[in-house]
Length: 454
Image (cartoon, rainbow, N blue to C red; front, top):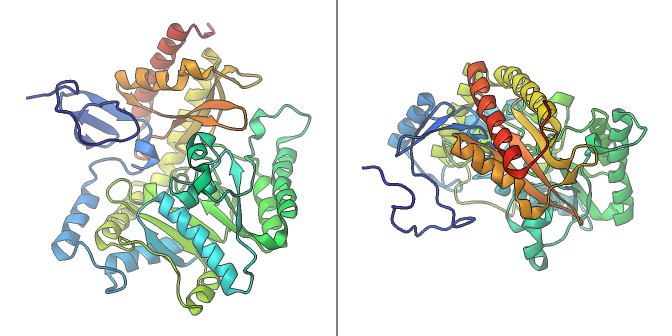
């Protein structure tokens, strides 16, 4: 018997809101089905997690085999083969000498680990005054207290401000919004130079690291900096002896058409954080990658003062290893690049019809845009209008799951939208997704009396 959300017993769970959703029954490929038979396209891979899609039999069978052997073994008591092999395989995909892997259960944990490793490295190398981690505004790096300290979104941090160690920040390189006479390459250098200005203002001896998303995530919706930004950032970090941390939690694991977002620019950071796509929703899994030159002095000093119960869990790592194998077998990087071009082109086409879509951007299957009242000035919609939430609800009712955030900055707010379906999506499925998206924009425009061209 099918039970509608309004007919189900009261839930003892609580999450972000009181909103009830249909009860999910099964998932396969890019689709979900609910118990009442409705089908949904997973247009966002959840929160950009399900990179290889749902119901992958190779991953499921690998996890079953591991459960028949051992599901949990604490890292201080035993080593396990899935963790050792996954670490070896991940190290082979990291740039430069980042061949030391520390496993965690999620993105926030990975960022916490990176911040703590940077600090302990500074102490272990006789630089105890270095503790500040510069980040960007806006940005998103996780929900734990340490991760919130480097997250640039007042909607998430303001309530907890008294409990958070505030960290300095520089503007995110939103060069596509700038109205000046500079080229994009000049803008990239200008945004990067803001890091040097901030380092000098804070005191170089107090700064230990700079953390950034190579391609923007939840806060900046697939923001792609100008090419000139990356080498200049690396040059500045090297000049002042500061560690460069790349947060690849969302942009990594083939999401952007390369295994790492930074691979598009041949970047070589000092620390990389990963999660989401490396487990692809089959298990809670994340990782931090660093070089031996960072890890060795920390271990020599007495050990890494940090850890998690499920670090290197054999079941999670067996899933991660199978996910990596499937990414390679299915050609996820190449498909993400090709299908991403189709999806981005389609969204650009929709932006010509619906001028409240602005700043289309992204790489691979991490595509974003802004929803604005004025596409020239990027004036946001009134908060009371809840434009982005209404779009999500309309699309959901039509069977398409999207991801959107309203970001709060210093005196400004902006709605963004991310399109990020599983990397296995086909051209026909892209067409189906875009058709529903177009209908959703049409309904939104009609309901809110927004401009439509043609």
